[in-house]
Length: 288
Image 1 (cartoon, rainbow, N blue to C red):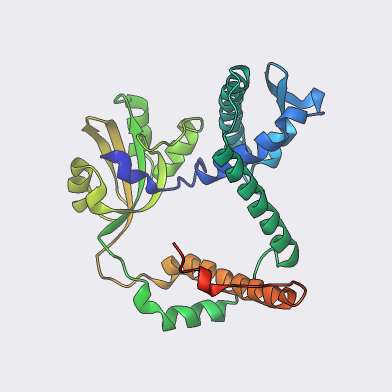
Image 2: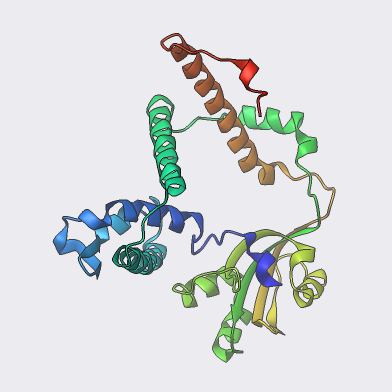
C-alpha cells in the first residue's frame, strides 16, 4: 500500500510536525485575540489572526509555501474550534484521570521551560566532531534494507498538460511546485520529495518500475488502483551498505547535540540537589 510511502516528510509542503506544532501554538492564543483588524477566521466569538498564523510558521519559509501552510493551519483551527465549542455546549468535562494528565502535562511544560531558560538554544557541533563520530561509529550507520530516494506525484486523471510538462522537465519537483502548491501531501496520496523509502514497502507496480530505472530518470504516468503516478529516482541504496557521510551527517549532529544537552542537564541537576531535602526509602519500592 501507499501507506508506507508516507513515513516521509514532504520537503516542499512541510506538513506533519510543523503543522501540528503550529496548531498547538495557535490554539493557545486564539481565544483572546486582540488583533481585531488582523482576523482571518472566526468561529462564533473565537478568532484567529494572520499574525498568529505567521508566528506558527518556521522562519525562512518561502512566501509560496507560507501561503499554503497558512491555509492548512486556518482550516485545522476552524475544525478544532468547532469540535471544542460543541464539546463545551454539550457539557462535556474532563474526568479525574484526564485532569491529572493535564496537570502532568503542565508540569512537563514548566520543567521544559525552566531547562530551556538555562540551556543553550543551539549546541554548535564542529565539523571535526561530526567526522570523528562518523569514523568511530560507522558500523551503526548501515542501511537495514534496500532503500530508494524518490520524488513522487500522484493524480486522479491522466492529465495531458502535466504529462507534457513532466516530459520536458529534468526535475519533477519543479512541476509539483508549479502546479500542486495547494495540494497537501497525505498518507494516502503522497506528493513531493519522499526522502529514502524502503523499496519493499512501496506498491509492487512502483517497485517493478524503479528496479528498471536509472538514477535521475523520471517515469510515468504509471497507472495503479490509486491513480496515475510520476516518479523520479534520485538514489538507491542496498541493504547492508554503509551510509555515506553526507547522509549520516544530520543524524550525527542530532546525536551530538542531544549528548551535550543531556550533559548540561546533568550538571544543572547536580548543582541544585544540595538546595533540596531529598529522602528515599528503597525498602518500599519492592512492595506490591
